[in-house]
Each structure stands twice: as C-alpha cells, then as structure tokens.
Amino acid sequence: MTILLYIALGYLLITGSILYLNKKDFTPLPPTPRNYFDEQAPSVTICIPARNEANSIERCVRSAIDQHYPNHHVLVLDDGSTDGTSEILDSLSERYTDTLTVISGQPKPDDWLGKSWACHQLSEQALSDILIFIDADTWLEPEATSKVVRTMGSDVVDFITLWPRQKFGSFWEKTVIPLVYFALLTLLPTRYVYRSPKWLPSFLQCKIGPLFAAANGQFMAFKKNTYEAIGGHQSVKNEVVEDVELAKNIRRGGFRMKMYHGRNAVSCRMYESREELWQGFRKNFFAGFGHNPFLFIGMGLLHIITFIIPILSLPFLFLWGSTKLILLALAAVVLMFLQRFTVDLWFGWKLRYGFLHPLGVVWYQLLGIQVLSDYFNGVSAQWKDRNI
Image 1: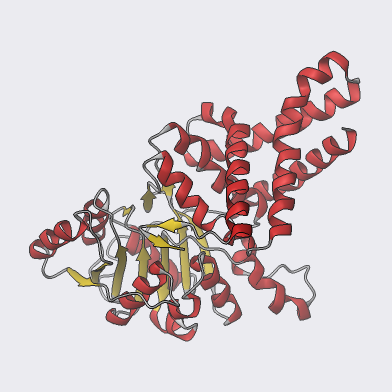
Image 2 (image 1 turned 120 degrees about the horizontal axis):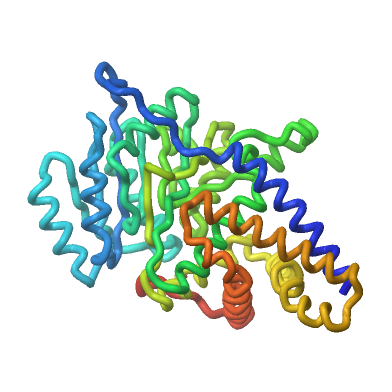
C-alpha cells in the first residue's frame, strides 16, 4: 500500500506542475480591435460536415452565418443524413443564398473514415485563404472568426485549434466529459504544442516534438496553403483521431501552430444521451493511445492507483493504518480534488460534480474494458450508422 500511495502522490505532483504551467499558457484568443479588418480581410470558408445532426445543425449553421467578419462563407456537407438534417439545411440555404452553400456528400470509399472523407470533400469546394472546420454540434460566438484570423496574422501561425466551452445537460455528461479536459491540462504542457521543449537535444526535437502536438476537431483553422502542403484530410483518411494526426503533420511539416482556450469563441455539446456518450468515446478512446494495448492498460492501472485507491483506502486506514499511510492517502486525495476544482473553476463548471471525479474515472475504466474487448475480439465500434 505504501508504494501505491507514493506512486499516486508522485503522479499528482507531476500533473499538478503541468496544470500550473497551463494556467499561464492555455489562454483564450485575444479580442479584435474595432475596424481591424476594414482595409484587408482574408477570405474564410467555415466548413461543416453533417451527418444526422437534426438536433444541432441549425444553431451551428446560423452561428457560422452570423459571424462579424466581412469576408466569410459557410459550406456544409450533408453526408447522407436520414433524420431531418437535409430538410433543415435546404430551408437555411434558401434563406441565406449569399452566405451559405450546401453540398451533398459522395459515397464514402472503403479506405476512408466518414468524417475525414466529408472534410476532404469540403476542402475541395473551399477556395478561401483560410479554412475553418467545425463540428455540427458546436456553435460560434459572433467574433470567433475575427479573433482567429487576427491571431493567425499577429502570431504568424499556420494552424489554430480551439478547445470549446463544453455545455452539459445530463448527469453523466457532467460527470464524464470534464475528465477529457482534466487529462489534457494535467498531462500535456500546452507550450510544447507550438514549440519543442528547449531541454530536448536538437537532434531529438524533430522526432519527439510532434508527439506533443494536439488538436480538437471541434474547431480547427488552417491557412489553405498549409492545409494542402500537409496533404489535408487525405493524409489522415483512416485515422480515428484525425485532428491529432493533422496537428502532428503540421509539426512534422515545419509549420507553426497554436492551441487556445475556446472561451468567448466557441461552445459545444458533444453528446445528448448516455448511449451517445458511451458510443462516442468508445469509437476513439483506444485510438487516443495509438492503439497500444500496453500503454492503454498501463494508464488505466495508473489512474486506478491515483484516483481510486487513495480515496477507497482512507476508511480502512483510519481504522487500521499507520499515521504515515493516512497522511499519504489524505495528501493524494487533497491534491486530486484541488486539481479537479481548479479545472472546474477555470471552465465554469459546477464544483459539486468535481467530487464525483473518482466515479468518472470508474466510468472510463469500464469503457476501457469494453474497448479492449472490442480490440481483442475484432469488433468495430459504430458511429452514425457506420463502422469505425
């Protein structure tokens, strides 16, 4: 038990240090001065792939149309929807003929995954200087495009990704989804997303630097020539986590990228039911670990040691444990909740759900068992009526 508690405490001290750095580095987009684009405004196409998104597509498209940016167009691909999405898009395209174009998706080739194929078709129709890809379950604040284009110019970057402000409805959304952001901000020093660690020897920076690349496919903005130079979505046509692979290609290609907090720019509600939540994470959970079962199992065990064992052991330690073990377990529990509450306050989430952090970890452990079962039994997860 002593060794396990030392492992938990050591892990939490490391992740706490990373979270501290990210509090300084992971910032929202700066505001755009008034009349900034009066003289020159690069053309922008906002690309939206949509398949069976009747619940969210109208809000998404309207928010893209209503951007306070003087030179943008909205391009939506209807990827064989059967739930009323097509009818909503037809109605919108009749109303916004100058700003919105809706295209019908072509049949998906066998060697492509659905989202990358849809985004590839969108990119072929978009002729603008800057391409912005957003998911159909997101919506933009009116100044989002202006902020992104201005930041691309002022920071001289070729690719920007935003992590949206997540909106929750159900109990399980509030319990599970914050752990995605928690993991991001306690494991990835975001400063290394756009520059290689200075402590790395120069001969390793080109090889290891891309491993720090990260992106969120809910909002990605590319300079068009950069997108084409890395091969666009065709270069990641069969990748489940295509957003991260695109970010790695940006780094490998020697281009500059940055990642920002999406506060006051973009919001998202990822899933609206318990079944959607389970299937949505089921399709990409293992892919996020590079389909490496040893890494996947190892991280699962580490999370059990760090977030489950200390809190479960405390009642028994108070009865039969030594003072040292009690203090180690208490320190681990305090650090765990301190980090979680820091993330919750940062993103404006209700603190009381932070107390359910261990339950969220258990949920992911159960999902991990499902994912490993899929992997060893050759079962394909499904999403939007397609095998992944």
